[in-house]
Amino acid sequence: MLKPEMPSINDREGDRPPSGLPAVADAHVHVFPPHLFSAVWQWFDDNAWPIRYRMTTRQIFDFLLGRGLGHIVALQYAHKPGMAMQLNQYMADECRGYRGKVTGMATVFPGEDNAAQIIGQAFDLGLGGLKLHAHVQCFEMDADYMEPIYALCQSRHKPLVMHVGREPKSTAYRCDPYQICNAGRLAKVLAAFPHLKVCVPHLGFDELEAYRRLVDQYDNLWLDTTMVLTDYFQLADAIDLRAYRQDRIMYGSDFPNIPYAWDRELKSISQAGLEAAALERVVGKNAARFYGFEI
Figure: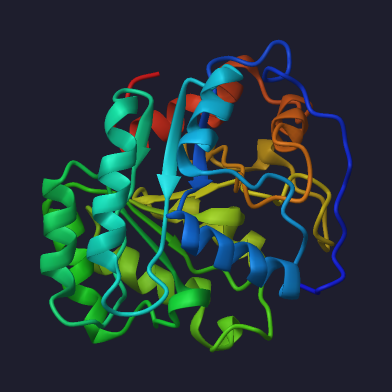
């Protein structure tokens, strides 16, 4: 659970990914218009951890690409109904100058009027998929109003990134993630929409073992590593990436909304004992396959 007193870590950052890593794609980078970024950072200051990197969208892109990353997946989420169309246009505009290097993702507020139409228009703008966040948007992933969203993403062959793991949770959210998020609910979605590609961030934290088993069971499920390999959260057991299905795990950082160095998670992955082929998949190739870009 998030706590306001969670620390900042003043660890040293590198100017490139750790030596020996193959081509890197960061599959979990957040961008927002400036006024929303300010609100997000204030929320983190009040309820979670201090943000180390406070940058504009293009500064984020330039920072990561300038340090040798081969590709970035830019994520956003609508905090309330009626704002998704503006956010989607913003994402399309900001990514336009970074073709081939940045994949921008659309958003919608689940349950709002014309949700499928909003998503379809975002895909027509060139956005590469959809991002949803159950903790912020308080949706139930197996609710009837979610079916048109899933159906559209499946029919348009667009991936869905959906934060439906129960952690990291906060009492500052409008809903309790433990009441609306669990691996069993996601299994129903994966079975009902077998051609819908879904990525769950944070390896499904805190149901880590349940999500590891789901990846073995469902070919349409991926997980990203965001923040759970950095020794920041207290985990019941250490995570061994070698125990996971190697073609279904992708690196993500949560940059810029992190309290430590941008390359901290990459350093952990580089020391995870993965064989060369598996390492290549985890830090880049799996994301390229999931999102449909080249690296």
